[in-house]
Length: 343
Image (cartoon, rainbow, N blue to C red; front, side, top):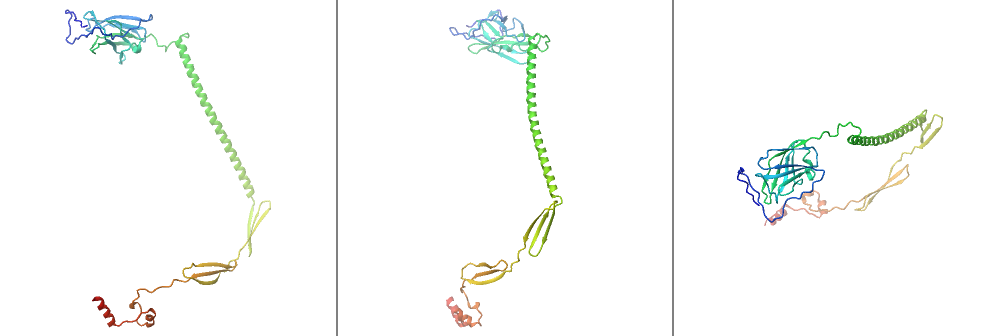
């Protein structure tokens, strides 16, 4: 419904009203029953600072606090039927917070902000002055914001970091955590030690192997040096052979005799003319001391006479003309042939 404010109240120019539709389902959220452990801070909140900027005290990190706001407009309760609301906070640490799930409309004119619902546990996390406001919208998305109010978050007395009592649970938890870290570090050190021990054992084994190899090499070197000591090698030669003799320090000799071969005397055997187009060939006969080489040389192809003129043959050689089937021509015969070619 549309409610007209009293005429005695000074209405700013930018004031607007919420439209209300009758016989419609309510949009307000259903608020859960307050748990016995929760404490409620009830306040009256308007839109024109007619109540002043009030401050609500609260302890840091409490999640059992509920802030109840009776919304008034022109000194009368405001009808919040079919409306939605959420809280907006500029926190003392400079961060901003908007709580939709923790803000609920309990009845037609009351808004509850519960620190135990949803993100409400962040409302009291920053100690100091937290500047707050409630934002309300109706079905037509018309919006209005309440006047500012403060939540003074008082930090808790201690954070458990400097407790010296031996029977304190925080001290026991910290001791347990320290012991767990110490055990984890010890296990890590043990693993590293085992890995290093394995590496040392492998390195020791390699060193032992290298030492054994060096000893074996030294023994072989001594054996070779002893074997090579006082060894005498001689080589003699006669007309038919040469003798290689090796004598060790004990006087034991080993000889190797190798015969000297004769120098061969090559001779030319037959030289035969082969047929035209055949392949040339060489054969070896005789003995090792007197080898004989036989050759077959093919005959060349028969030549042909083509395009031979008189000028290619000397005029004085008449027999050559007759052998070639040619005859000499006089100057007159030559001129007659030229005239016929011209005509």
